[in-house]
Image (cartoon, rainbow, N blue to C red):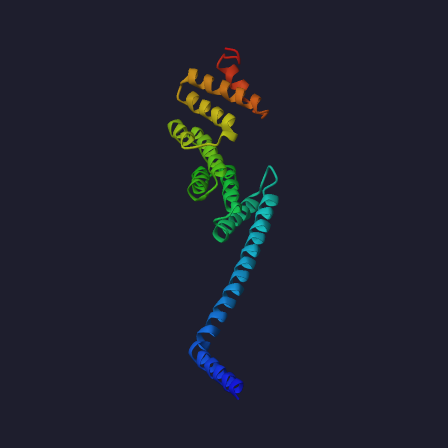
Amino acid sequence: MAELRTEEEQLEALKRWWKENGVSLIAGVAIAAAGVIGWNAWQSYQENQASAASARYQYLINLTAGSQLDDATLAEARELVVEITDNHGKTLYADLARLIDARLAVADEDLPGARAALEAVIDASGRDYVKGLARLRLARLQVAQGDAEAALSTLDAGVPEALAAQRAEVRGDAYHALGREGDAGEAWREALDLAEARDQPLYGVQLKLDNLGLGVDS
């Protein structure tokens, strides 16, 4: 009887505990389950978004692969860039799409559009190499537009060492545009030295030096 009474007391205690804590326990389990389900759903969503961004970017690559694009293809490609950047703005695909858009804008003789695309990469990307590549291309564009001083400032803002030879070449182009031929020759020689040291082909720089009347050993 003592054992039975102990069991009944335990049962009553359990009932009281459940009455006091059962709702919060169920809620806690439900919240935990919802968290797991939500996390899995988020992971699935992220994977789907990455797949979608990759597919759209690959289509953009295929669409712009030709050296000559007709007006309809060019318009479709630039609309696709907008789609990728709007829907996948924080991804590497968005950065690369904007770089392509800058090239397409130049082909379309839309230099302000090219500049805007490159500046968007510089402002939005969290990837140092991509930002540096955009700065390098922006500097080239600025030289072409007669804004060599701005090009030098753009290069000084940060271009990665992996692109040091190209950076030196564009710096030389900017100096040449400013009439600073000695500085231009020095920068172009540096570009050739860096390219040779890193086994990176760099075309046209020797011709620029020759046109200045400067050889590699000058």
